View 1 (cartoon, rainbow, N blue to C red):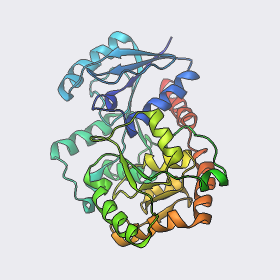
View 2 (cartoon, rainbow, N blue to C red):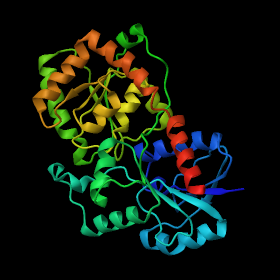
View 3 (cartoon, rainbow, N blue to C red):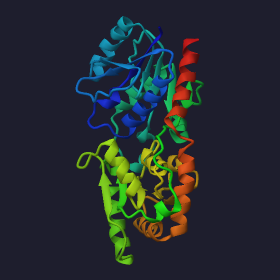
Length: 333
């Protein structure tokens, strides 16, 4: 039987959040219908999932050890394809490799993130050596093409998928009484400080404005079941980050029938397809106005939740898994 290895390096850096969760849900959907043997390579101390049809195998951790040891491991296992959840692939791999690029922040200097020259070089080198590259959004696809010096036939646009929660009804949307829910970590790009300032401004204008609740590492990580409950109850999902390569929280909100307030960024526009209230992330005033409106405008809330849920149905893990199967079949041919 053909053996396909999936590199779970994204599971080894703490709690499993956006990138890791999207990878695992798509892998589960893939394995359910795969005719091949699926192996998940897990670095030391990584979260170890249980996925039907997937065999977990311990793998080296650390950039140098991965480059030195993974090729031999792949050869010993008899792996036909290595599908990586990140950009890094072993340069000496004895089989075709697939890299996944989630974002390239240094191509967007306006967000002010500092990236070392070493990381830039390593990313570009790895992507050039991969046989295929997966990008989850049109912006990241275009950024990758720009990094590689032009459009390249090995680039693939494969959006992430999130399983649907319970379908919303108008009554259920009106009954949402939880806080504004903001998912994500506390990196500056996530814009937490400005959101807090905007919420205080909006609260001064609207007495019954819901509280603001941040969920995510490092201070408040929750498991998937608790997160789904929060998504089902929140007044609205709020995601006003300054930069995203995809923007999984927006899709999570839509998939659970929540009204959504989000940044007016290309990847978030691509996900929401007009079914979220979009605001300028660098304007405290615009975010404050958005918070008041997503709370008080019943027609907007219903439209966002109902149409957004239908949009989320187009971005399911099964759809991403189908793209994976096609890419693998082409590489195996």
